[in-house]
Image (tube, rainbow, N blue to C red):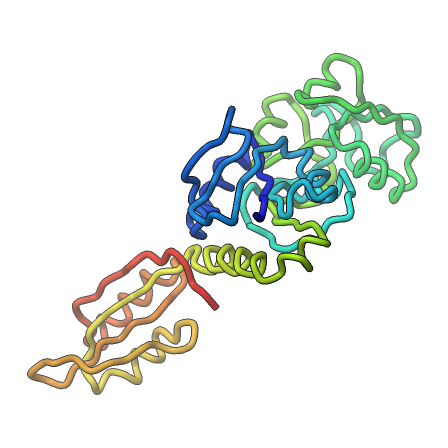
Length: 286
């Protein structure tokens, strides 16, 4: 049994369930108090754990794989294998000060400044790198209010859009790391269950490769094939087959980036393409 620890709530919970579903590991039965779940693969079980605890679960072998933020992985600093960037839950760990502060960069921070954060390890490393001796206070949530209630001069916190910081009259003066959800593995499990884990990783990669890709299908006159190949080279060139039609026609299929669909269709129409279909892609297996 391969056990995958995933966040039991928060911003990474639903996207993690979603990508596993799209990768073919759909939840079929929740266990007692929704602490675990079976998937369509009888050899794969999900464990629902606090995102902050997932690196420890994976390190200790309570889970073979885990999904959590890179920020959590780096903060907890457990010896786990970083396998795959899942490319969702993107955010930045930033240093922020009140709008009224004269601080514009880390160089302006005075010795002994008070910093509130949920990430004391990463914060300590950051200020050490900048040669600043600061007083770090660990908080649990609502970090952005710390400067306004007198317990900190500045904060280190996660932000996706910066809106929450703006609402609380804070400005960003530096960025520590960019983060997103990552798949991690127990190092012993990687050896013990290599074939199974490789299969899970391949399934997840196939979902990531398909994101923002579309399949364009069209019929084109035979004499326009070279023009079509120039217009839409695709991942490895278009797939071409004969069409049983009165005049010489070819069926052309190609995978393109979503942002290129509009221009490809318009250019293809100019050289005689017709019967054009645009189809979503669920997975691309390399």
